[in-house]
Length: 353
Image (cartoon, rainbow, N blue to C red; front, top):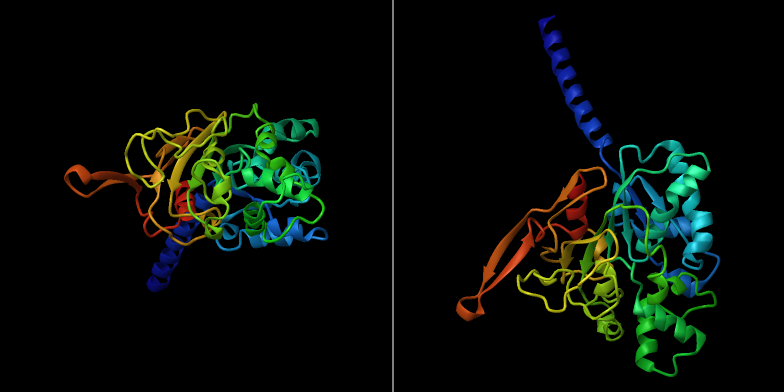
């Protein structure tokens, strides 16, 4: 009998611990994914598998850590069918199910940044007009965000419309990026043109903090870098990924630290930002696509180490400094703790918990 009582107490204690752990997780933020440009949809045209492509997009890492995905077709426009036929039904469902009651973080990649900006500017009005409660979105994590557009989209549209003239280097760069030539409908490529992108919900009423995560790596053997302003991740330039208020040849999101982590005055740093846009982590070890995967590519630095979210809680990244060289060749670098053996995406996920 005594043995059974001990067993019962032990089991009850383990159950209690499990319940506490579960509730701690359950009360955490909900993660909503908004993917970027599906280039294969642009080059292949309709029919497309919007849901299947969305699932595949995030399959390496973020898909298993998310609560909701908002999938959308690249062959449509953000303020058109993407909003009405794909974003709105998800918002309605999330409101009805109370998904964001504990707080939602939108995790976006590339063009998903633009989709999120339009969503944030309109979701409260849309839902209230439908008699539903607005979503409690406490922040966005914009990874390699294209909120300022991409010069590659301007060029791709020009090539597709035959207005760019014959330029083999340009055409090769566009084919490397898209994986082929544009077939018919340009869709969201029109929204991604730099001037067009910057006009979408340019002055949002929502004060949701937009945390930026920026890469500066090389893809396509460097073919696309020739056509992007300043430093870039081979698809999106720093002005766009940092959330700069204008397009220019910027080299860093921070005036005091380079994307490599070197602490030094940055004369080509972004000088002004779009409303509520805050650059957080930067790295010259990741490219446009590796940033959303779970492979550690190298150390990451912080433009800012902490930022308060809309609910008053704070996201933090612990940093340390490391010196290299000696005498006149001595340099100091700032790195995020554990970034040498954790992917950029995992660092972000850990910061949410």
